Each structure stands twice: as C-alpha cells, then as structure tokens.
Length: 285
Image (cartoon, rainbow, N blue to C red; front, side, top):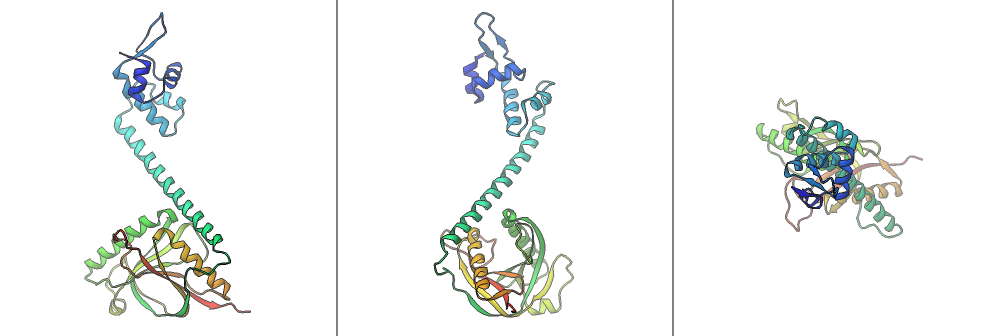
C-alpha cells in the first residue's frame, strides 16, 4: 500500500485533493489507520483516480462525477475515451478560434499604427479579364476553419478534374460572395482555371460548376506576398484605398494564387504570392 503522499505522486494530484475526494466519498482510501489517521491507497485505485481527473477535465462537477462513478469503476474506458476525444476536439476548435481572434487584433493594431503613413502596398487600378474556372461553392462555418475547408475543397476539386481528364490550369481563385463583412457562414467559391473549351462544353458533373468569371472594366488590385494568416492586412489596405479614392465595390473580392496551389507545401523560405482583385465603380454623387 502507498501513503497519501506517495499515491499523490503516482496519480499526479495533490494530497489536498485526495483528502477532498475522500471527504466526498469519491475516492476512499483502502485503509485508514485508526490511531494516526494516516490514509493508505493501493495501486488498484489509480484507474478510478484517473477517471475522476479525466472527468474533471471534461468540465463535469464533482457531484456529476460522483453520480457517474456511483456504481464503482465500471465506466468503460472506451466510453471515457470517446468523451475525452470529443472534449479534445472542442478545445482544439476553441483554440483555433482564439488564435484567429488574436491574428485579427494584431492586424487591426497594425492598421492603427499605419495611420498617417504611406501604405506598404501598391494598389493598381486596371481592367480584369474573364476567367474560365471549375469551382466548388460552399458555406464555411467560420474564419477559423477556413484553412481546413480550403485544403478539403481544393483536394476534392483536383481529384474530380483528374477523374474527368480536364487539365487544371493556374492560377487558383477564391471568390468571396458576401456583400457585407462576416466572420461566420462565409459564402466562398474555390476554383481553378480551366480551358475555355471546358466551360463552353462542360462535362456532366453535378458536383462542380464550370463557368466564366465575368470581366470588369475597373478593379483595384494589389500583390500580397506573405503568410496566409496575415492576408487580412492586404484586404484591409485594398478596401481602404477603394474607400478613400471615391469608389465602392462593384463585385465580389477575388483571391488569385500566383505562386501555385494554396494547399501545396511550400519551402521554409517560400512565401505565397497572391493577387487580390476587387471590382469597383465610382461613387455617384
């Protein structure tokens, strides 16, 4: 048997908590010396301690844990593992969302620090040509999940084009269809350039859209070179230019991947090169 201090080291939980669990009847020592009051535990009690700690990590109260374990240590490991996997996924999603919020805060801070200074981006106003694409349009639940959906959708797109024997040309393009800012339920279309013939005589494929993105006589555009996580910097700079030069958006924002597929692994020193295009029109007075 193990003294309470020894058992606390084995289970990586404080002696104070072990005494508390004993008081609540959650984990009663195997033996308590009637003269000294010393608590003793056996190695067989470790699984129950591990279950208590795991259930606490899931956010359950000690009362709820007591009810779950009321029948002894019969909470199956498979059931507990499933509960922990779900909690793990929830925490990972929460962490991803917090990281995205942090990036957005950093971006806004940089925008404030740039006030009164020349923009680090050169904006070009030019016509943009029509672009024949094969694409998949989907609602992305949140900004934090955008990278996952980008990988998934482009993976589906390339596999399907390969099955149809249609060459994928470049650049890739992402079209953001929202007419106002959203950080949830993003209406995006991810596509890749194909030959004009593929659009004029599209194959029978209900899961893909073969279309020609329209040409615009006037669009504001910038070249952004940097990590995808900081792309909002370029978007905000582009929107600021449009707003301060007497224009409004006349169509959805396009993101062209000039340096290759967005989902492809890049070298340590390689940074994505992206062109952001926003169709514009002059504000009528």
